[in-house]
Structures are given as structure tokens and as C-alpha cells.
Image 1 (cartoon, one colour):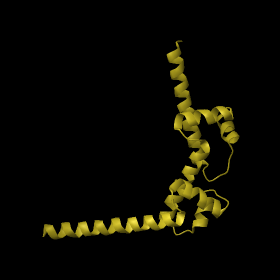
Image 2: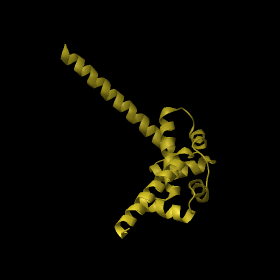
Image 3: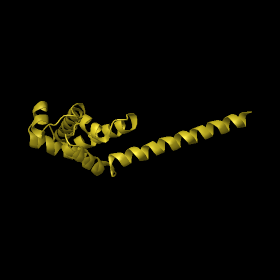
Amino acid sequence: MDKQTQRRGRDTAGKHLALQAASYIREHSEQKFSLSEIAGALFVNSNYLARVFKHETGCTLLWYHNAIRCENAKKMLIETKLSVAEIGFSVGYISPAHFSHQFKKMAGVSPSDWRSKEACKIAHDTSEETVSMIRRQLESH
């Protein structure tokens, strides 16, 4: 087997491993787990997993875990009336302060500010859609 074929095989294996790790994190995002737990579930060395994941995705496993939690929280902030603290607990944080800190680090704004900003966007988008619909109806008559 030549070196290029070997390299291609390693690249494919690395991508597959990164996808498996990402899938594990998404499925268990609300839980606390360690690098060694993920590696154990995937039957690989934890240092190897961390290195491959970083190489394939450009981010660490911890950053990815926090990003998934943040995305889940954003969805809940829009779709529910739960408090910020309740959402933090739902996505896996044990402290509302830690949740807010991590959310702000990932999203650039606090969860409350994000919710307010998105609610305004939705109201604005809805009002624009309504105005456009009325305008089309008037033009058609």
C-alpha cells in the first residue's frame, strides 16, 4: 500500500471518528461527561480522540459540547416560556450563572438579551409578512 492510500485511509478514519464523537455529544448534550468517557464509548484513546476531533473540526470537544448546549438553549428560549435558569438546567448546566456565562461566551449576548432580540426579530418579520400579504391582496383587487 502506498503512502497516499494510507493517508487517505487515516483521513477517512479520522472523519468517521469525529462524526461518531459529534453524534455522541449531541445525543448526550444535557449530561456531564469527560473526554475519557467519550473515548471509552468509541473504544479509542482519549488523547487520540481529542487530537483527531480538533484536526477534523477545528474545535475542541468541550467547545463543541458547549455549542450544542447553546443551540439547544436558543431553541428553548424562542419556543418556550421557561425561565433562563430552567433552560440552563434543561440543557445540562447545574448553575444558572455558569449557563449564562457560557451562553454569553458562545452567543455574544446573555440568554435574556438573546431572547428579547429574537422575539423582536420574529415580531418584526411577522409584521413585514403581514404588510406584504395585505399589499398583495390590495394589488390583486
